[in-house]
Amino acid sequence: GQSLEQPSEVTAVEGAIVQINCTYQTSGFYGLSWYQQHDGGAPTFLSYNALDGLEETGRFSSFLSRSDSYGYLLLQELQMKDSASYFCAVRKDDKIIFGKGTRLHILP
Amino acid sequence: DSGVTQTPKHLITATGQRVTLRCSPRSGDLSVYWYQQSLDQGLQFLIQYYNGEERAKGNILERFSAQQFPDLHSELNLSSLELGDSALYFCASSARSRDEKLFFGSGTQLSVL
Image (cartoon, rainbow over all chains, first blue to last red):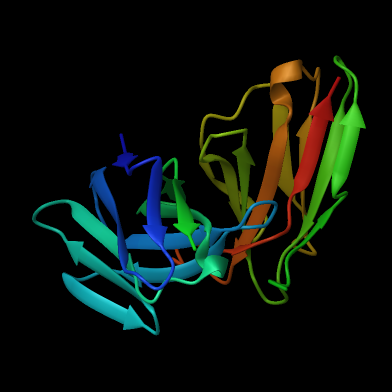
Protein backbone atom coordinates (compact mmCIF):
# COMPACT_ATOMS: atom_id res chain seq x y z
CA GLY A 1 0.00 0.00 0.00
CA GLN A 2 0.90 3.63 0.09
CA SER A 3 1.33 5.87 3.08
CA LEU A 4 2.51 9.43 3.51
CA GLU A 5 3.51 11.02 6.78
CA GLN A 6 3.63 14.74 7.35
CA PRO A 7 3.36 16.84 10.52
CA SER A 8 -0.17 17.86 11.39
CA GLU A 9 0.76 21.46 12.23
CA VAL A 10 3.66 23.84 11.82
CA THR A 11 3.94 27.40 13.14
CA ALA A 12 6.25 30.08 11.79
CA VAL A 13 6.69 33.85 11.87
CA GLU A 14 5.86 36.19 9.03
CA GLY A 15 8.92 36.86 6.91
CA ALA A 16 10.67 33.68 8.04
CA ILE A 17 11.34 30.36 6.30
CA VAL A 18 9.49 27.14 7.04
CA GLN A 19 10.00 23.57 5.90
CA ILE A 20 7.19 21.01 5.71
CA ASN A 21 8.41 17.43 5.56
CA CYS A 22 6.85 14.41 3.97
CA THR A 23 7.96 10.80 4.11
CA TYR A 24 6.34 8.19 1.96
CA GLN A 25 6.07 4.46 1.49
CA THR A 26 4.85 3.31 -1.85
CA SER A 27 5.62 0.76 -4.48
CA GLY A 28 6.21 1.98 -8.00
CA PHE A 29 7.14 5.53 -7.02
CA TYR A 30 6.85 8.12 -9.79
CA GLY A 31 7.28 11.41 -7.95
CA LEU A 32 6.05 13.65 -5.15
CA SER A 33 3.54 16.46 -5.54
CA TRP A 34 2.54 19.30 -3.23
CA TYR A 35 -0.83 21.05 -2.99
CA GLN A 36 -2.02 24.06 -1.02
CA GLN A 37 -5.51 24.40 0.40
CA HIS A 38 -6.83 27.52 2.09
CA ASP A 39 -9.70 27.20 4.55
CA GLY A 40 -12.92 26.78 2.63
CA GLY A 41 -11.06 26.49 -0.65
CA ALA A 42 -10.03 23.85 -3.12
CA PRO A 43 -6.58 22.28 -3.25
CA THR A 44 -4.28 23.89 -5.78
CA PHE A 45 -1.19 22.32 -7.29
CA LEU A 46 2.15 23.76 -6.18
CA SER A 47 4.90 21.51 -7.46
CA TYR A 48 6.01 18.07 -8.61
CA ASN A 49 9.39 16.38 -8.17
CA ALA A 50 10.17 13.27 -10.17
CA LEU A 51 13.94 13.43 -9.70
CA ASP A 52 16.16 14.02 -6.69
CA GLY A 53 16.97 17.60 -5.90
CA LEU A 54 15.45 20.99 -5.38
CA GLU A 55 12.86 22.63 -7.64
CA GLU A 56 12.31 26.34 -7.11
CA THR A 57 9.22 28.32 -8.04
CA GLY A 58 9.32 31.80 -6.63
CA ARG A 59 9.13 31.78 -2.84
CA PHE A 60 8.29 28.08 -2.81
CA SER A 61 10.75 25.24 -3.35
CA SER A 62 10.29 21.50 -3.21
CA PHE A 63 12.91 18.86 -2.57
CA LEU A 64 12.99 15.12 -3.14
CA SER A 65 15.33 12.35 -2.04
CA ARG A 66 14.19 9.09 -3.60
CA SER A 67 16.76 7.04 -1.70
CA ASP A 68 15.38 8.35 1.61
CA SER A 69 11.71 8.28 0.51
CA TYR A 70 11.56 11.85 1.73
CA GLY A 71 10.66 15.24 0.45
CA TYR A 72 9.92 18.69 1.74
CA LEU A 73 8.26 21.93 0.78
CA LEU A 74 10.18 25.07 1.64
CA LEU A 75 8.37 28.37 1.93
CA GLN A 76 10.47 31.52 2.13
CA GLU A 77 9.61 35.09 3.05
CA LEU A 78 6.42 33.89 4.65
CA GLN A 79 3.33 36.01 4.16
CA MET A 80 0.08 35.85 6.09
CA LYS A 81 -1.64 34.62 2.94
CA ASP A 82 0.51 31.47 3.12
CA SER A 83 -1.57 30.33 6.10
CA ALA A 84 -3.14 27.18 4.70
CA SER A 85 -2.91 23.41 4.71
CA TYR A 86 -0.26 21.77 2.60
CA PHE A 87 -0.56 18.23 1.26
CA CYS A 88 2.04 15.96 -0.22
CA ALA A 89 0.83 13.35 -2.69
CA VAL A 90 2.09 10.37 -4.64
CA ARG A 91 0.75 8.49 -7.60
CA LYS A 92 -0.05 4.80 -7.45
CA ASP A 93 -1.02 3.69 -10.97
CA ASP A 94 -4.15 5.70 -11.77
CA LYS A 95 -4.69 6.99 -8.24
CA ILE A 96 -3.17 10.04 -6.60
CA ILE A 97 -2.94 9.50 -2.85
CA PHE A 98 -2.68 12.46 -0.49
CA GLY A 99 -1.17 12.78 2.96
CA LYS A 100 -3.35 14.09 5.78
CA GLY A 101 -1.94 17.57 5.37
CA THR A 102 0.08 20.04 7.41
CA ARG A 103 -1.67 23.11 8.71
CA LEU A 104 0.68 26.10 8.57
CA HIS A 105 0.07 28.83 11.13
CA ILE A 106 1.82 32.13 10.58
CA LEU A 107 2.37 34.58 13.41
CA PRO A 108 2.69 38.30 12.72
CA ASP B 1 -10.76 29.60 -11.23
CA SER B 2 -9.55 26.08 -12.03
CA GLY B 3 -12.06 25.55 -14.82
CA VAL B 4 -13.60 22.56 -13.01
CA THR B 5 -17.25 23.09 -12.11
CA GLN B 6 -19.02 21.28 -9.32
CA THR B 7 -22.69 21.52 -8.46
CA PRO B 8 -24.32 21.99 -6.10
CA LYS B 9 -22.02 23.90 -3.75
CA HIS B 10 -24.02 22.90 -0.71
CA LEU B 11 -26.39 20.03 -0.10
CA ILE B 12 -28.38 19.33 3.04
CA THR B 13 -30.29 16.11 3.26
CA ALA B 14 -31.50 13.49 5.69
CA THR B 15 -30.23 10.05 6.59
CA GLY B 16 -31.36 7.35 4.23
CA GLN B 17 -31.65 9.69 1.27
CA ARG B 18 -29.83 9.62 -2.06
CA VAL B 19 -27.99 12.52 -3.70
CA THR B 20 -26.11 13.14 -6.92
CA LEU B 21 -23.06 15.37 -7.14
CA ARG B 22 -22.07 16.69 -10.54
CA CYS B 23 -18.69 17.62 -11.97
CA SER B 24 -17.71 19.19 -15.27
CA PRO B 25 -13.98 18.89 -15.94
CA ARG B 26 -11.82 21.54 -17.55
CA SER B 27 -12.29 21.83 -21.27
CA GLY B 28 -10.23 19.12 -22.94
CA ASP B 29 -9.53 17.12 -19.79
CA LEU B 30 -10.39 13.44 -20.11
CA SER B 31 -9.66 12.30 -16.58
CA VAL B 32 -11.89 12.90 -13.55
CA TYR B 33 -11.11 12.08 -9.92
CA TRP B 34 -13.43 12.13 -6.91
CA TYR B 35 -12.18 12.78 -3.37
CA GLN B 36 -13.86 12.97 0.03
CA GLN B 37 -12.56 15.34 2.69
CA SER B 38 -13.92 15.08 6.21
CA LEU B 39 -13.11 17.42 9.09
CA ASP B 40 -9.42 17.18 9.96
CA GLN B 41 -8.95 14.45 7.39
CA GLY B 42 -6.92 14.49 4.27
CA LEU B 43 -8.24 13.93 0.81
CA GLN B 44 -9.54 10.39 0.56
CA PHE B 45 -9.43 9.04 -2.98
CA LEU B 46 -12.74 7.56 -4.10
CA ILE B 47 -12.62 6.81 -7.81
CA GLN B 48 -11.09 7.87 -11.12
CA TYR B 49 -12.44 7.84 -14.65
CA TYR B 50 -10.69 8.36 -17.93
CA ASN B 51 -12.62 9.04 -21.12
CA GLY B 52 -15.70 7.31 -19.79
CA GLU B 53 -13.99 4.28 -18.28
CA GLU B 54 -13.36 3.56 -14.64
CA ARG B 55 -9.60 3.37 -14.11
CA ALA B 56 -9.06 3.20 -10.36
CA LYS B 57 -11.06 2.71 -7.20
CA GLY B 58 -10.17 3.71 -3.68
CA ASN B 59 -12.00 3.01 -0.44
CA ILE B 60 -15.34 3.85 -1.95
CA LEU B 61 -18.35 2.49 -0.12
CA GLU B 62 -20.74 0.17 -1.94
CA ARG B 63 -23.47 2.75 -1.31
CA PHE B 64 -21.51 5.15 -3.53
CA SER B 65 -21.25 4.93 -7.28
CA ALA B 66 -20.02 7.14 -10.06
CA GLN B 67 -19.89 7.41 -13.80
CA GLN B 68 -18.42 9.56 -16.52
CA PHE B 69 -20.64 10.41 -19.44
CA PRO B 70 -19.76 10.77 -23.15
CA ASP B 71 -19.55 14.55 -22.76
CA LEU B 72 -16.95 13.84 -20.01
CA HIS B 73 -18.93 15.24 -17.12
CA SER B 74 -19.10 12.96 -14.11
CA GLU B 75 -21.61 12.24 -11.40
CA LEU B 76 -21.09 10.78 -7.95
CA ASN B 77 -24.15 9.09 -6.49
CA LEU B 78 -24.40 8.62 -2.74
CA SER B 79 -27.27 6.51 -1.43
CA SER B 80 -28.62 5.36 1.93
CA LEU B 81 -26.86 8.33 3.40
CA GLU B 82 -25.52 8.20 6.94
CA LEU B 83 -24.42 10.96 9.28
CA GLY B 84 -20.81 9.97 8.68
CA ASP B 85 -21.12 10.73 4.98
CA SER B 86 -21.18 14.44 5.80
CA ALA B 87 -18.07 15.81 4.15
CA LEU B 88 -16.68 17.98 1.41
CA TYR B 89 -16.59 16.14 -1.90
CA PHE B 90 -14.10 17.33 -4.48
CA CYS B 91 -13.85 16.56 -8.12
CA ALA B 92 -10.56 17.08 -9.93
CA SER B 93 -9.57 16.75 -13.55
CA SER B 94 -6.45 16.32 -15.63
CA ALA B 95 -5.77 16.10 -19.33
CA ARG B 96 -4.57 12.50 -19.33
CA SER B 97 -4.95 9.48 -17.12
CA ARG B 98 -1.62 9.80 -15.32
CA ASP B 99 -0.95 13.51 -15.29
CA GLU B 100 0.57 14.65 -12.02
CA LYS B 101 -1.19 18.01 -11.89
CA LEU B 102 -4.81 17.90 -10.84
CA PHE B 103 -7.19 20.82 -11.13
CA PHE B 104 -9.80 20.80 -8.35
CA GLY B 105 -13.32 22.10 -8.37
CA SER B 106 -14.61 24.15 -5.45
CA GLY B 107 -16.30 21.13 -3.92
CA THR B 108 -19.75 20.14 -2.74
CA GLN B 109 -20.37 20.42 0.99
CA LEU B 110 -22.72 17.61 1.96
CA SER B 111 -24.50 17.74 5.29
CA VAL B 112 -26.52 14.70 6.34
CA LEU B 113 -28.89 15.45 9.21
